[in-house]
Image 1: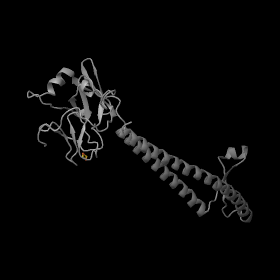
Image 2: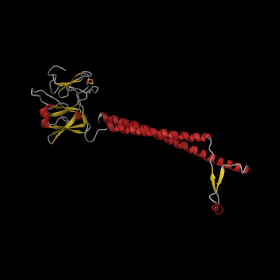
Image 3: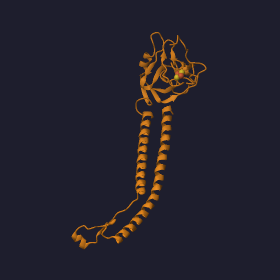
Image 4: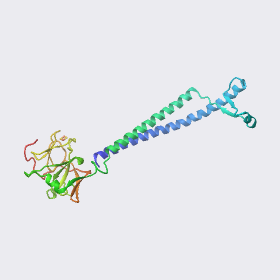
Length: 275
Ligand code: FES
């Protein structure tokens, strides 16, 4: 599992806990609602009682209970329709408004959280097709062989930006008995080194004169096969799984392979002055 996937899962977990918190809050508010509902019914009964009292005391003086007559014919044919006016107190009104505002705030926060989670996951999750995190076609093996050797017989990395990798010559026979033996990080005579320094993640540039990778941040150095040579880096440069299909080198940037420092490096470093 890559670091991006771990971060994505951690964010997902945090968002899930947040969502559970919001739903718990909403559920608690629902329970509160039932208490208020009881109160509303009581208020309704009290209102009816008050209406009757007012009506009895002053039939002409305006009451909270009104009679609606639809038309003259209906008046004679049917009983008048009674419209009831419910009286609420100021506290009840405030309570209802507060409840509405709380729910609106909760819903807004939930929507924001969902949008944030979706955007973050979309950004971090490895792409299934194309781009870093997927299998990337680095090119024709013969062409790569031509590009990675100089006329002077020195190594020249082929940088594949989409894979964030340096493709380096590395024969399977050279890896026999090393930590690379048995893991699919060499194919067609090449390995694909991740450009990221394993100390704190700086991009490590190639140094043609020393024939190795030299990190500008804290001075870690690696040979042309990405094996640790010096500095605070804890291991070799990480690399991706590779394969050759139909004469083309494929780099699977979704699978990172870590290897320990080698006691006996597979290639000499340095082969000249450092950069
Ligand atoms: S990030 Fe490369 S040595 Fe620290």
